[in-house]
Amino acid sequence: MMATSSSDSALAIRLERLTGEEASCCVPEYQDFAKDIVSSARFRESLKRVRALADENRLLAVALLKRRKELCACEIQAATGLTHATVSHHMAILGDAQLVRSRREGKWMYYRLAERTELGVP
Image (cartoon, rainbow, N blue to C red; front, side, top):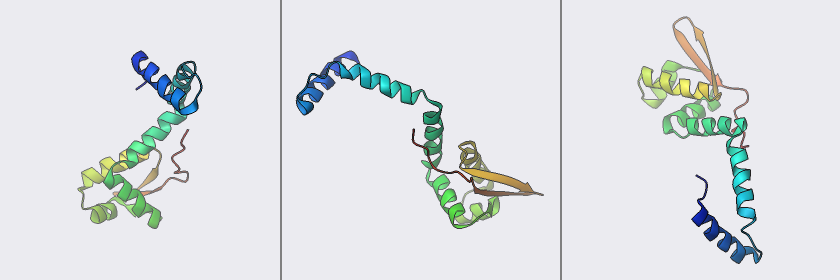
């Protein structure tokens, strides 16, 4: 995702036009800055959360849980029109992203929002 050397010079030219200053020296600095962010654990955690919410059904499930303290899988299934297996799959992704918590009560699986659900942009 980082710029190649030919696009580095084009970027430097654009930056020079915008700022009026010599910019070829700062392009590698910006690239290193971006690499540091991308390699951080916090970035990976945030990316996992954003990807989990990028699906319409998972975002709907989170919105439902925001309005109700807790829902069983069958209630989420009824609200979304998804199969039980699909709800279980989506909830596992949300759980892995630490957006929801689950508990089992007999044969029933209940879900609630995790206490800390912010995306945590690095």
